Image (cartoon, rainbow, N blue to C red):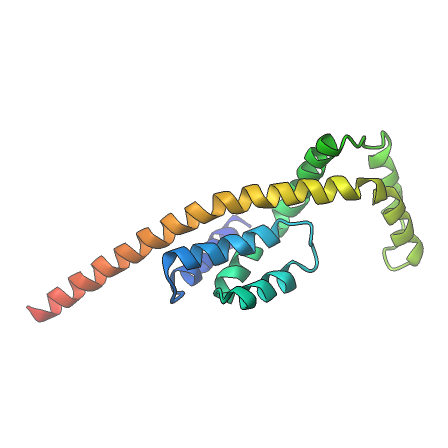
Length: 173
């Protein structure tokens, strides 16, 4: 799994570096994608992010890379944490038996209507904490992603230009 993660990150960074746009616009597109990737719009995040990228004429590749920076092995922890933060902000109490009720629902087949009805009933009181917490989390994560992406793209492109200049100088002599 670690090898897969390293290869994924390497490929992702390589794609981000080869976008023909200014570093600022690339970082903006990436941060927009990160916002949607960590937003409460789960399931619609790609559609919304790409639509906004088209409207703002931002690079769709950078946006999609940002959207999918919220990887499957972090998604549950992120949404659990941000829903908890949202519950503190909205002053919503978690039902004391929430874990047991969810575990009981997951003993049923997810292919049946009753599974989804019961799950919705259990989770309904946490809808606003989920929305508030994950929106706040998305703003925070995107705010961190922008300067990091900007610094990364600038540094890598400067290094690429220096390497290109060295190669050109070497070929002249």
